[in-house]
Image (cartoon, one colour):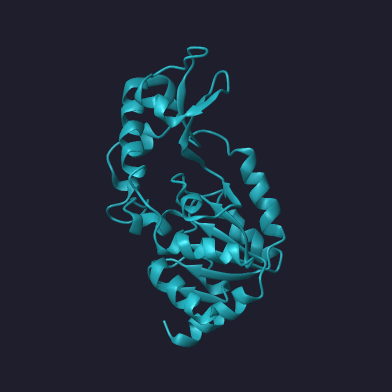
Length: 240
């Protein structure tokens, strides 16, 4: 990207009122696979079938084994420079909220405080029967809820489940944004992709940082088709 593009993005961010919308691409440099690249989760055998509400009830042992493996990998991951820059922008009151599709909690580990998780998180386990919430460590020990014997699983949105109330919270926040920064999302999964679209409808400026093209590139004020650590690093330099 040209230096002027980074400066333009920095000038927009400097105005404040920024809401960050992050997807799997922001965490790839922390060692967590994305979804749509050749090595992404969509291309891994059985991912969609095992990350589903049907598997939660009908393939209990396979479902629990699958999430135990995901948990062990994600718990080793650490925030990268992108997460840290987003947290710094929040600390100096330029970013108001982070809306994330990710379930890895790396934004919080980097220091972000106002994070809206629209797909849940892997730090918690959740019983779909009695609605109890536990530390995710319980999934290493049991396959059924210790309180009611119901179906326990990670506190994430599975394929086939409705979006949580946090999605409505995110939609309200994005309507008040002056700028939306998309980081690491292909914007191809709905209803999540409706969030930056809503930002545009409410006249927010749009910055997109994603390695591949998105359908909103033509509506954005600045677009960076490169890693988020590179783009955010250069933009942050231009803020100082």
